[in-house]
Structure formats: structure tokens, C-alpha cells
Length: 211
Image 1: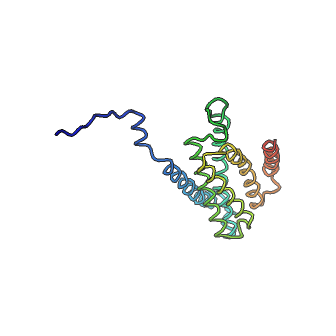
Image 2: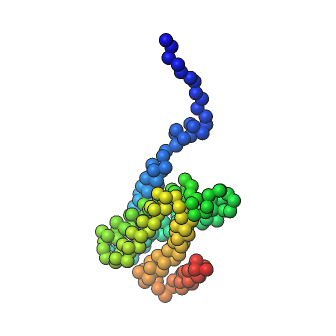
Image 3: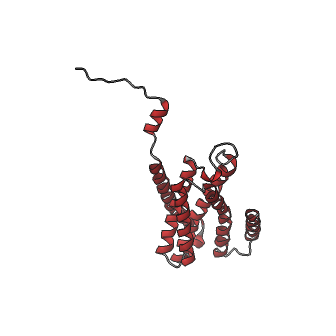
């Protein structure tokens, strides 16, 4: 008695689904990328500053940690601002008529990767805050990072409200100005023109984001 069998054909879509990593693996890879890039930028900031800024060597260990910490804080802020702006304005993800889903229920592989990357950043920064507590911030920083992580992870798992999370992440665009203000103050350049212009840019940045 013969064994019945049939031949099947593997379509391009089937091949892609078979080869593509699962959503959970993509999230984990993006989280790891956020953590590793934060640590790399931390080390790069320390090396770059010690070679090009002689005053850095005179700082205390606590000031050096915060100096380097603000380096990867600035890096994440730029990443979050540009990717959020792209997803919110440039891409079709949240545009009217692009999908049948409600705007609050929309997500994509890229938006998931962005939120996962930010999760890696917040985990790293929270670890720094706790390890150096309270040098890098008090309980308010722990609470802020904890709530941020909770909101992002909830949005990732549910696939909902990503548009609002991205709006909040876009407000990180003012962080580089805040960090530059701290850098200039710590370096003794509070009376410089750059400090004044940075303050003006920070004010208008907050004004635009508020509107």
C-alpha cells in the first residue's frame, strides 16, 4: 500500500516568514543594541573628553561619571528625536487612510525596534542611577525611568498607544541642549556666548514642544 504524499511550493512570502526572526527576538536584539550602544558611547565620551579637554582630568570621579553619562543620554535623545519624527510625520504609519486600524492601535517592526532600543537605554541609565545613587539623581529619577520603562513595555506588548509614546520620546529633542548647558557650566564656561545661545535655543525648543 503506497504512502500518500503531495508536493508543495514555497512562496516568497512563506520563505520570508520562515527566515525572518520572531517579533520577540527582534525586540531582544533592539534592547541589547540600546544597552550596548549606551555603554560604547559612555566609554567613547570618556576617551574623547580626556584627550581633547584637559579640564576633564581634573574632575572628581563622580563628575566624570555624570559627564560620561550625559554623553549617551545625548546620543539616545538624538536617536529618539529623529526616529520619532520620522515615524510620526514622514512615514505613513499614523497617516489617515494608510491602515484600517485605529491610529492608537498601529505599530510596525521599525516602531517596535525604536521602542525596544529606548528600553535598552532606560535600563542602562537606570542601572547607572541606582549604582551611583544619589549622585546622578534621587528617587525622582528612579521613578521617572521606572514609569518610562513600564509605559514603553506595555505599549510594545499590547501594540497600542505607540503614537503617544513616540510623541513623548520626541520631547527628548531638548535633552542635548540641557546636557550642553550642564557641560558648559561644569567646564566653567557659563559666561560664554555659547552658553547664552544654548539657553535661548533651549527656551524656544520647550516653547515649540509645548505648543
